[in-house]
Length: 201
Ligand SMILES: Nc1nc2c(ncn2[C@@H]2O[C@H](COP(=O)(O)OP(=O)(O)OP(=O)(O)O)[C@@H](O)[C@H]2O)c(=O)[nH]1
Ligand SMILES: [Mg+2]
Image (cartoon, rainbow, N blue to C red; front, top):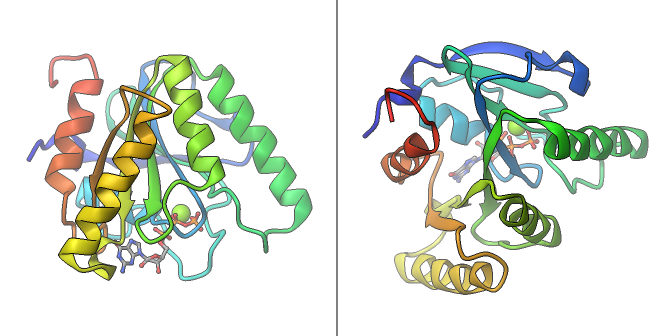
């Protein structure tokens, strides 16, 4: 497994786009519905339990949380989308900030889209894949919480999702994953490492 992400450290949390680190270097964003496991995935990838805050309460990540694993190379944990219980004002705020971030962030080179394997390809997920493809960004889908399914259900979900993705994008990759058990962390790490152009790729 690539060790690229194991030196990650917490950098900053931003409530607004203009509080993010300077827009240089390269970064990838972790996007997905609230509670899909974005923060747990960052912890599995970096092998740092507790680096990104995990909660049983959906809507927990209400900031852009930035982690740096090498000079000017970052992982960004985005607030979850689509959680109805988040107050309307907060939802609007985040919709606006995330949209602005996705449209304007020059250092953004790719997105990891995290879905609950039991409920994949919701409307926002599809939009994110479509947008990444159109924008020429790298994109990788994680079917997370695979530990909740049997092997055959898991394989079926993977094939169905791959077929659905192919109707939107021919460059988006997809894998099954369990952030909780770190199953698939090596595949994830090996997929993301070549996205970063540098001496360690
Ligand atoms: N069974 C199982 N549970 C998981 C897995 N990954 C995350 N969880 C659980 O799902 C819940 C949400 O995980 P988070 O990582 O906080 O999810 P998030 O997408 O960051 O959520 P927000 O920050 O609210 O958008 C927690 O209770 C995790 O322990 C997994 O692979 N398997
Ligand atoms: Mg989170």
